Amino acid sequence: MWAAALVHIFTAFGAVCALLATRAVYSGAWEVAFAWLGLAMAIDGIDGTLARRARVQDWLPRFSGDRLDLIVDYVTYVFVPTLALLQAGFLRGAGGLAMAGLILLSSLFHFCDTESKAPDHSFVGFPAIWNLVAFYVFAFALPPAATGAVVLAGVALTFVPLKWVHPLRTLRLRRVTIAAASVWALAAACVLLSGFPAGPWAGAALLLVAVYGFGLTAYAATNGGAAASSP
Image (cartoon, rainbow, N blue to C red):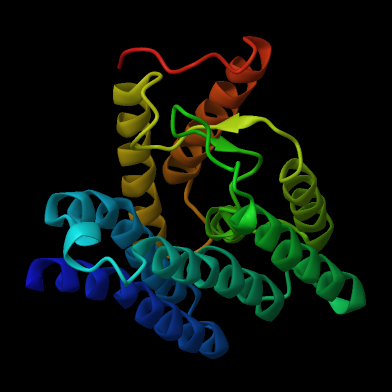
């Protein structure tokens, strides 16, 4: 039972990361803010595996790890990154506030959609990874107009049933996807250590991984959302 409880506490620590990231946002310490959001994302990436190994549903059936995960994810993947875009001036004025509202509302739809996951663990519709979107905006110092276009595209794609791979669980090209995620993590760490915007090599790596991710989504669309194959 204690192992199960510790897993839930580990997941819940993502909320503490969100608080510390918010403090960094208001201080203008953008690299620190994204470092905390990155830690929250790392926690989210491994807590499911720990939960299955600890058999949390058997030991603590009254406590929903799924609900806890969704609450923490909404704050760290959506709310804090949106706040960062506003505070840094990438979303400006009344139009920027309206687009921030669209991010929050469309993401609520995704989080409440009972069919947002495909049988192969892909996400159906843009998976509300606004922490990554915001990171790219900061990394490439996008102007407000370009940021607005990216936001509107992400909001619209939330309602389009394209399949977006889960970097750890989707079997299709799983080894390649994990390798790409590792390259992305290394490039992102370099950016946070050196400061925004990204340098040429880190920027190139971030772009290549993004192209790979979009390519997998396009491939799934052109192949009728084919089921996952062997890794």
